Length: 315
Ligand SMILES: [Mg+2]
Image 1 (cartoon, rainbow, N blue to C red):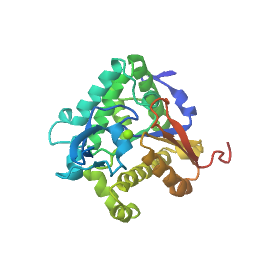
Image 2: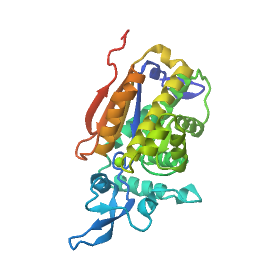
Image 3: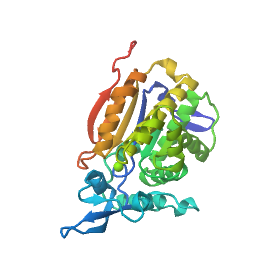
């Protein structure tokens, strides 16, 4: 730790590896109270409205014999609470539900399996991406991350995070003067990615993509969210490589790894396959690690895939 420009700067970050994370949000980081409005086939053979939690949905989403989207309104009606509404960010359901989920953790409830990894990622000031099947604007998710920082990190941990963030600025951006804590935190959060894959902006980008556009147009409605997660991960890895190119970090040839965690086994399998088939080939020097967090009793989940070279020349 050094003092530069009157601030504590953790210059030791210059010795670190390049480790980054992609997090699913619901039931991976936080258990949100948001409901999904479906119809369920009851014992008397009648379909009746039934709202389910996100964790139940991840189990029943393939069970078309017993659950279906509402006849009236379809997908949009089922996921109406997973979208932003016009107006202030503070009034968005995602912000309200994040606050409620964080309050329950503060009161002693067990958080999602990747909650601790998220806390560590923030403390260490590492770049991350949130990739969720929700449909919110990136700014809404970023605001929720800010709430997470305020609630889930202690004041001492926030200090540690700031010293690390200044360390990265000093090391990779050659800064010897720093902005206010609020400015430096803003800068950090602007380097991270917030992909809500059913938001209009994200869908548009994906439809325009040379590789994914045709694939998503031909995909079933069950397959589409998985494809979208794949696209979001590719985007994040490209973003990381560009960032390291720009800052000269890539020339250091440090081991680079990208972790992905999700509590939906369907997503985990699809993403693992995509990493093996495409990303590992394109980014051969990157180590990819996938964590299946569907078993909530396992902290950090089950490590299911490791792809990419583990031993780079020169290490
Ligand atoms: Mg989830």
